Image 1 (cartoon, rainbow, N blue to C red):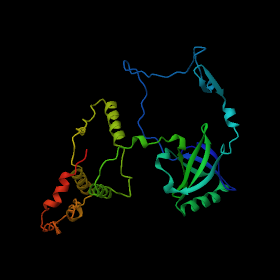
Image 2 (cartoon, rainbow, N blue to C red):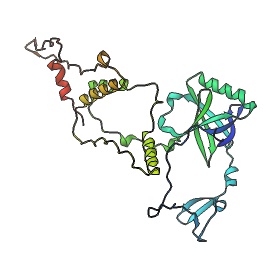
Image 3 (cartoon, one colour):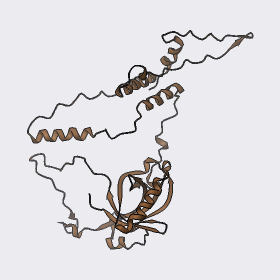
Image 4 (cartoon, rainbow, N blue to C red):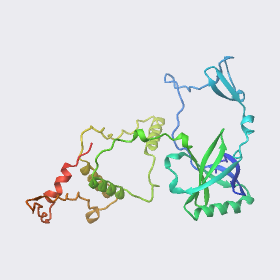
Length: 313
């Protein structure tokens, strides 16, 4: 079990629950050191004082805020710890909201398990965990940690409280200027896109692996054993920018998704574009509406025309 990163208490109304904060994830990335390409020696970053022109040990390094180009305001750890914040040693629950109300863009990527700290915390910890598990709401709390106050989301996973760090409102950019201009998309194209989503829907994503890390580890292993790494597979070509038949691309994507799931025969049916309904026009009181095409084992021309006309970039 990893060591606790923080200890304090959950403040839930008048209930106080001593807890420890433990990282919920682990970094499995491959990390590199900087080396001198001429001889392979390590390149180290040393911290120097610009005034005394000497290397400074960690014990002499503090925090400073730049208020102007040549002016730094030193702030000590003691001053930060003495700030009058109610969240300094507590995770203060401020509200409960429906889980669906949290925009995923607010999640910062940092997640932590909350461990009950001692026997006295066991019962109130279990109480709030069971209460959260019984409904669809999550807790929103504030926590002062690592020199700043953070907004966190608390939820339950397998009986354990999990804290997800959230972005503040002013940390999220307005995406309005990035949205594409309004383009014409037919209902048939939307229906086929929804069909593709259904074909790729799953309840379990545990089988996906970090294939880049695996390939990188294989390269490092080959070099360590003084042999040539395995030749890479041919990379997919870059898009050529040509206009494609959007409906045909969607239907082919559905076929591939269903084939990957092992669906064949009747299970691998494709939604064809519906024939457009001709409008009724009258001339001298007579209707010019055409009779519907006869049903045959093959696609009718009326059913094919819209598919040929629908194109997207």
